[in-house]
Length: 166
Image (cartoon, rainbow, N blue to C red; front, top):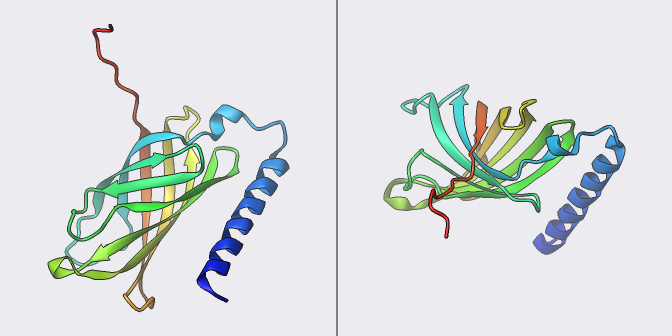
């Protein structure tokens, strides 16, 4: 199966699953609780951190209304790039995200791809979330080298406003 075919098949599967989930949830769903759109400040706590790495680190995530995610973290600009992925609602205030990022080794040489899958629950206030995540790191040949786990807590960031309006 070529990469283009797999990519299109995956897109169709995600779309079908998304439609099935939305239809199966019924009218009892509180629509306002189903929105991740916006930017969130997140604290990631590693469950099994690699030696020498801190237990926690900050992350910024932007969830777009079309189901896409953009993420960056405070782990350093030279060891990883920004992350890109998708999110889908899986239940009442429940979401699953998957995103990917490039890792870099010494000298900023490409070291492989990281895949992160997260299960989230948005708080009743709709401005917080708690999550568990699994990170799979692959080397440059696509071989899985390590699996890491984390818990996460997020806070929705509010829009700012300039005091003087025209």
